[in-house]
Image 1: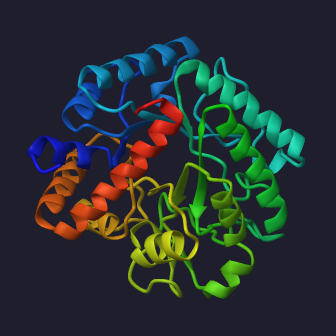
Image 2: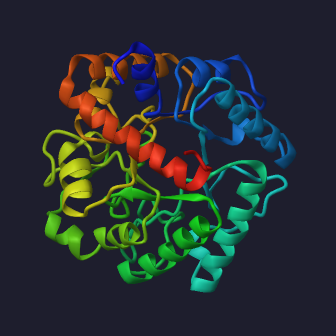
Amino acid sequence: MDDSHDIRVLAGQRLMLGFDGTQFNADLAYIIGTLKAGGIILFSRNVDHPGQVKILCRNCQAYARQCGLPPLIISVDQEGGTVARLKDGFTRFKGNPHIRTVEEARHFAGTTAKELQAVGINMNLAPVLDIVPSGMASVMKDRAFKGDEKKVSKLGLEVIQTLQSRGIMAVAKHFPGIGRTVLDSHFHLPTLDLPLETLEKSDLIPFADAIDAEVSGMMLSHIFYSRLDRDWQASLSPVIADDLLRGKLGYNGIVMTDDLDMKAIGHDMETCIHQILKSRIDMALICHKGPNIDIAADTIQRLLKEDPVLYEAGKQSYKRIIGVKNTYLNFP
């Protein structure tokens, strides 16, 4: 993979991008055909009803094939409750705090998988595996399963296994856990001042169990864990993404950032991309149309060309992404 075309594919597959509109349009043609994005993400702004979503997803995949590219990961946040992008025409669930039993978790995941598959969405950015301490006004109190690490793990694993057994990639989030924070990373940079030993006894347990269950993806939080990495929040941290998640916990699936457009980031996009590549993070999630998408694509290409170490790591990321597409999207 030494020519410019292959560099563009290597770079593009590292991107999961948002867009405007409810139909295939010039922006999607650019994202897919020119930038060669590995995935797209749907929000409420892209959804009218199931029939429309099905046509949108079908046209996006058809264009990727026409361009000679691997099939797209088409993702959505369909947690239920406060975070559910698909509403009209889809089953509405109350969300994780209302799921108390394995049977309820299985029902949520089975129904959701069936409805996602019917419209061509192949990845659910769920389940939330964050643990909310009892009595805490956590930012995740309306999105997390209730209970300790054992309960969260048990319910989360049922969601993962049910989704994936029905052909929908699951993504565990938000590693290494944000249930103890009260600030919203959409608007602030939360800090969590806890040693690794404390996290290992609680917050990390559901994620470790998800790794054992071969969860397809792992989403990093934007939280600054001051005892783990003094310089970078988790989504940009080689200590957390590479040393801890890949090294110590042995995760070999797709690692992705949370949305890089969030206020918690606080860095320019070039800096973000350099940290992402350095940290062996596979996919950068950019959820809004704008210059950051082009900056990210250009920066990945430039760094892959300039730095042999990042290039070799980039080939490994590409293999992980294609491996998941092979498993779930029948891509040889």
